[in-house]
Length: 446
Image (tube, rainbow, N blue to C red; front, top):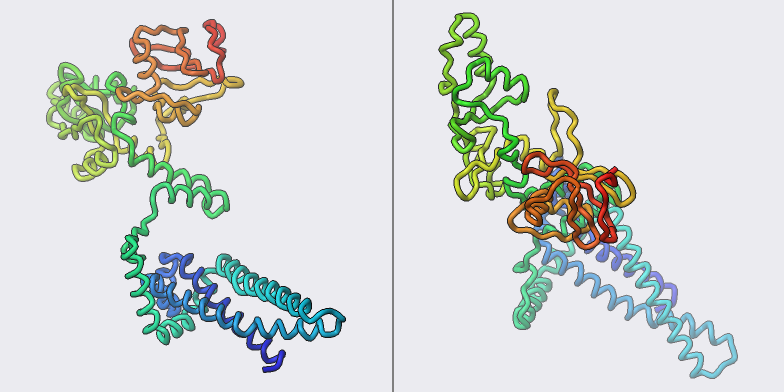
């Protein structure tokens, strides 16, 4: 075989090798969901490619077999061809035969390896990664033909490899768990955000879903002390005054105290009753008990994902949370749960809420005492741990139950200073990061 024929065959085999390399990367990277969309639009190649992703184990074996055969062929054909080229080149120089033989071998080996790695491996890999879908649809049919031709050999090789793997105590490809973990999904989403594939809002939705799975109802409830309620003895005028002040649609109805909740009412029904009572002059005959609906009552430690399902099944917008002693600890609405994923939802009557934290100066922040400890840890890089309470205000009271406005608690190099307190509940706290531990004056808060 002359040099020209050898070079032509070498680059032809190199092209075939690149085909198998590209096919391997395409099979690993192609998105099955995208193939489903293409199949629904009648793309036949997408259907073939989808079948390959379902039988990924055997089709990857087909590409690896192709890569191995072509690599052996490149070495068998390329080594003598390139060596002959450099033998002819060094024949023009005056040097010992042994030196020219060694140089010819080394240079041909280096060039042959470089060509095979760059053109046969790296370039096809880059093309497959950047043009996965387009390339996959073009390679699907020829790869499928190769698979069918070599299936008997692929079957034998796969069975042998699986037997050896099991003998060594390892799972086979089909037995292994190829599910993506939560941490892997977070990393994928983070990389997609950096590359611009998704925007920040989409990324935040996914993060919220992961956090949603871990939240308990008490972490997002309206606490008992802040619950807007109607009383069983309220008249229509009393109810109208409460609705005008609070501007909610649904209210729990209590009798005696907030531990005795009779049910919930929808003010739309009360409004209709109010109109009818005015028209018929029967306001004194109004009885709130006629409009009561059963309340969803659950323990405060119930995960919100389970509470959401329960509220959906019972078609109720409000849930009453009770503590371990059976007393009312707070309430939660469907809106509160949905906001954990999509963020705050404001209606026409809501005033702008104070944010959980605002920056007042360098290393100086003001936070709401209802801010969750987990969120405080994340925002300020702390490691506060408390099993019995969820909020930073609860943690401060746990540390010093009789703390007053202006008093402080120091956690490592972070100082917490109570700024506002209502009865037994802390409302606002100032946070000083990288604090040296010295006491602050009350005037220092601003």
